Image 1 (cartoon, one colour):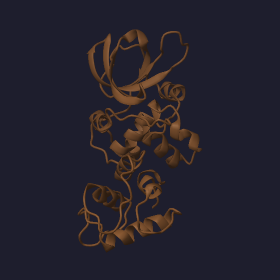
Image 2 (cartoon, one colour):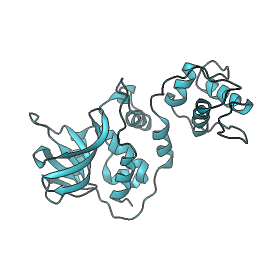
Image 3 (cartoon, helix red, strand yellow):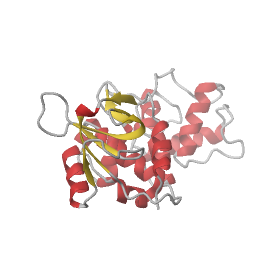
Image 4 (tube, one colour):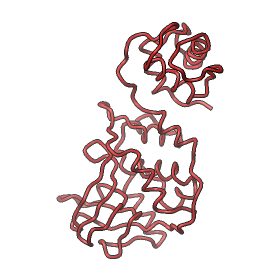
Length: 251
């Protein structure tokens, strides 16, 4: 069963993560793929999907079952209420609690985050997704807090979903295209291609990730291109480079 510290540790891996210019995030993409939803979720507001995906990655279904699996903050808060695990204000709040915010001028729950530290009942530090279009730490006053949910942690170690940990690391917008990467080349760009191929379970031969674009890497690139409907040339062009990061994961 889950521990609050496991969830918080997983969340710290994404501090300073920023959504793409299109609004697309690894959390929206992964949530959408996991639940077979429409692609609009890829760029949807992601504060709650961040919590769900980190919960599943940190502690598997056990963690997700006590933290909640939602994209909509109001539904998440209602879920805690139905379980009798909802608390108004900040009295008794502690690390690992899921805290819900009502911004000034609003009349419903606008945002959700996870409590990391309690400096005082009026000074709460959280780890937030989708604040300023990024993941970061924030400190806020109790006047902004509508209430919090208390997950049923029991401080026993749980089993992380390693497949999702890998998926979250895999998904995301590709970095700048460095120019075609092809047979005979060596260096950091080749190594990045090889790392993506390996994470997607394409074999690289006995040399593995060595930064040397040899025959085994060319075969792996060709196979990846064929699987993803690209021209199977064995050369990493701009379309292939982008797909190494952004193409849907396959079993």
